[in-house]
Amino acid sequence: MKRTTLLLTFLALFGLMLAACGNATAAPTANDTAVSNETSTDSGIVNTSAQSDVAVEEVAQDVTADIVTTQTYIDLYNQLNDSVVNIQVLAEGNSTFTMPIEIIPDPDNPDDQPLELPDDFHQELQDIPQQGQGSGFVYDTEGHIITNNHVVANAIRVTVVFSDDTEAEAEVIGTDPGSDLAVIKVDVDPDRLHPVTIGNSDELQVGQLVAAIGNPFGLAGSMTTGIISGLGRSLPSGASAPNGGTFTIPEIIQTDTAINPGNSGGPLLNLSGEVIGVNTAIQTNGLTLGATPSFGGISYVVPSNIVTQVVPQLIENGEIVYPWLGISGTTLDDDLARAMDLPVEQNGVLVFQVIEGSPAAEAGLRGSDEQITINGLGAVIGGDVITKMNDQVIDNFEDLLTYIVRQTSIGQTVTLEIIREGEPQTIEVTLQARPE
View 1 (tube, rainbow, N blue to C red):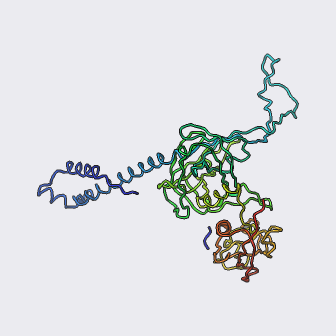
View 2: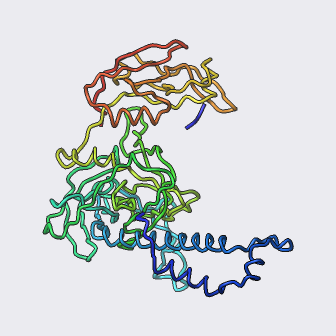
View 3: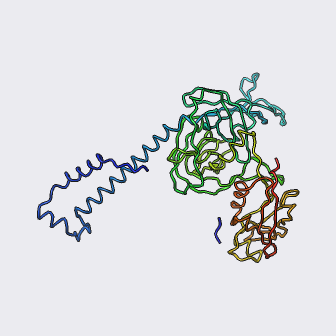
């Protein structure tokens, strides 16, 4: 069971390369021709004019492709850079500052020895405004700008800096911790605003060339490039669930495009200049205490199709409310299937916990209640296995989450096909609003 060009021909360049090749290999004589069509048994090389032509053509195509890609990136930057903004934020803070005793000088001590203070000395500085920055991009000529929720969370003041260094104060219009998206608005001349085109993230393919424009470490108007490294990832959101966990953002895009602090909220672009996602998080390992996390080869991007779902609601209502099933669970893998006496070919989502008062609880869905050990690790089994929601086959937890977020609505009654104690059953669940 599985887990989870504008092809531009530069005729002048190609012709020049062919001419150079012709000059390097003058018109052959009869003897030359006889030799050139023979195989050299010592070197193992076949030197024929036909093969030379093929080699020249292949080199020309490679050079042309490189030039086309380079020019495409240049055009992309020139087209989109004015649409990307630097967002500077002053936000409410609540930090604790402990004064480092070892570097506090004693003004009365000529030897400049550390000041002797009680062991329990400390100074708490609370509600200190915190400064931060991120990126964003222009959504429309009315002044709406898209960024990450975590960029503007708890903002006291938001300033937008455009590519020509002009500044404008911004108002936070709507935020959604559940998708880590936010909308802010500036009051500027519409001629200054250059809206982007939102693409279709469902059409993305692994290996596809992409680019990001943003402000890493405050370096305004920086561009990085890469590919789509993976699709269908999940990312914990800033929205808390009633059971103490966090809700998850589905359909996350993985890219090797360099994303660093300051890039958050900026656009990921395809080579057609369409925004196909919002740069949101990076994978880091082995951080030193106090160090700033930096790019480690894996970046996570909220897909554009979630943007098109969320942003209009944020503009209209200031928030978005998602439908909610009310379970925690995991993808049924081979080991879990065996432990529950199910065929290893069986796919689905094993329900770990049914949250009290949730739609799932009201419908009678059952969580896992048996603790076991698999390969030396603890696991729980025995819960319902969800295999279908309406007509959508559920192979893994990502399928279930994506279907709920993208295809259902609050108050809708959905049909779940489940396996309970080895037997198939059908349960109807009326989805409710996700609790805050």
